[in-house]
Length: 118
View 1 (cartoon, one colour):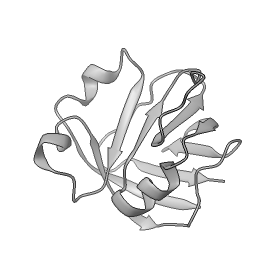
View 2: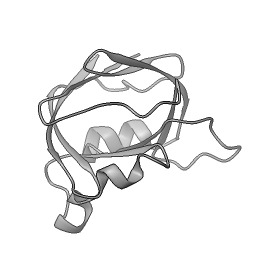
View 3: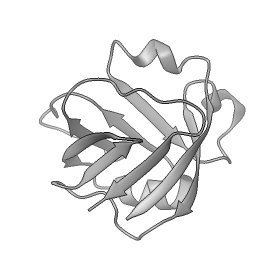
View 4: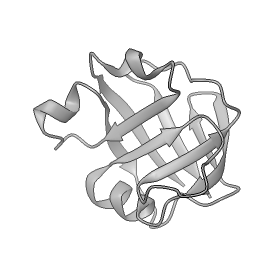
């Protein structure tokens, strides 16, 4: 299991609610990326926390992982970066993408605990 804490919410993050996308990035994100991302910092990180059938939790809101891009675990480990989509995956999944169900956009704030369980 990996756990991380939301440190900062970019000003543009609420605009992605309609598209049901959350972009996570570690604290080293460039300034132009921070405005559209949730900046988080790991408390504990496992090697491959993103697996189909696993879960992502935003505090007590639990989402089941339905698809994982080929680079998602690597990007999460190295950059703290993934894009989480709260809808069904297309046929071709971008390498850093993760798709989850249910398809409702989560509530989160600075201090929200995110857990990745495989």
